Amino acid sequence: MRSSLDCIPCFVRQALDAARVISNEPAIHEEIVREVLLWMGEADLSESPPRFAQRIHRRLRAMTAVDDPHRAAKDRQNQMALRLLPELGAMVEGASHPLDVAVRVAVAGNMIDMGVTDDVTESELRQAVDRALDPPLGGEPDAFYRAVETAGSILYLADNAGEIAFDRLLIEYLGPDRVTVVVRGAPVINDATLADARAVGLDEMVEVIDNGSDAPGTVLADCSAGFQRRFADSDLIIAKGQGNYESLSEEPRDIFFLLKVKCQVIADRIGAPVGTHVLTRSPDYPVLSEERGGT
Amino acid sequence: MRSSLDCIPCFVRQALDAARVISNEPAIHEEIVREVLLWMGEADLSESPPRFAQRIHRRLRAMTAVDDPHRAAKDRQNQMALRLLPELGAMVEGASHPLDVAVRVAVAGNMIDMGVTDDVTESELRQAVDRALDPPLGGEPDAFYRAVETAGSILYLADNAGEIAFDRLLIEYLGPDRVTVVVRGAPVINDATLADARAVGLDEMVEVIDNGSDAPGTVLADCSAGFQRRFADSDLIIAKGQGNYESLSEEPRDIFFLLKVKCQVIADRIGAPVGTHVLTRSPDYPVLSEERGGT
Image (cartoon, rainbow over the protein chains, first blue to last red):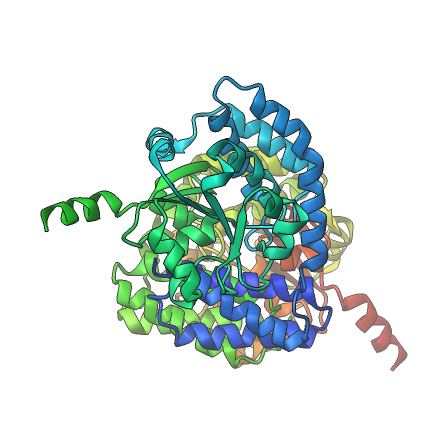
């Protein structure tokens, strides 16, 4: 999806916040803010938000000469999520509709995000899971459950460190044999990479590949040919998080997005308030499907 | 005061919000955002926030060829405040410390602001007044009451339309004969101009002058020589609102600022949470006073 004018102050804000997390140097804070301002002043807004975030975080890593500035935070997030995993696993197992609860837990994990909000605590995460169990999941869960029943192969696009531990529960109920988990190709913010998949033991239960890109989303043109092939060939695609939604929601594929709505731009687009946990389908898919049917 | 890096995303946000209030043209929304980004990328941040806001709103007026885009909103705000005035006047009159209550009402009126927050409703305004009566007023009210006792002349720098009606109550208790009210020299956002002073009848009770500037604050270098003289010669200066604080807090003068804290930058500087109503003195004044004493 295009970036909205409303995304622009948010990019500037995020660049400043990220610079402060990564560096104590006021000169670096000012330099990245000024660069982002000048880029955005001339930017092609048909690019999706993760494209701009990719550029900002590449530049911050270059400025600070730190390749993976959120490594310590990601380790903390993985460990925190792993500590919660046994009780969440028991909860899913004891539920009358385990797949439904596993989906909710996986979406609740999407609150572990340093891109939009600050780092979360274990008690906030526990509360988020509790809150996620009661209300009806927005979007199209029934269509999702039907798609899951028939899919031969499932591509599971992960989002953040920590969150990726919760994904284990859902993947277990999807059936690990037909699932391939995809992580980012290089560190960006707290997005999960191969190191995080290994840290939470996903690599031992399922095939894990990386997409070859350091965008905090799935910018197809920036991904490896190998990933693009898997993306084209999979029967069902599940994509976690707002960055994946922003970069893939207009692809002519049926994709199910599991995310927490984190800003008004996405809230307006999906039709669900900020803070909502949703399971939503590619908005353009039904139309594209009819178009295909007619050709 | 210098603009903080934290002000920059806020300038971009405010430019976009203001453009949407003034115009339905997406091309204008995009144009002002891009211009602000390019300005701010090269900006001298030693300028105060009202300087940047002045530039943004001048450009918006030029783009849309509308000299006073918030005229209708200001009329509504004046009328709304005037409707509340009789009951607020009775409340001040019946109070055990009328000057204290008049100060609180004047600060509560500072919530009528289209620069930072959206337009307010009458019930929100009534609630703000109610809330303003109970808690101790942050800052230095006692020093203010002492200064009021001895001042021969008082310069009262007004802030917004609507709010300026509430200022009448405070001015009455200060004593209209020694007070001069100052409004902006030209329309900017919903800041009060001579038209607003007349609309709420201030011109009939007190001397009203304009400062010759269209900044949403008091940028001395941009003000008329006449105003600058009055600023230098007055015994006591009372300045309403965050824009006046941002532009005057570092002046080597003893100024009492009455404002609602509307952003984190000012909250950090004043040492009071966002949303607080404060009566605060020029932060540098005590130091400057000692320095003066030594020369």
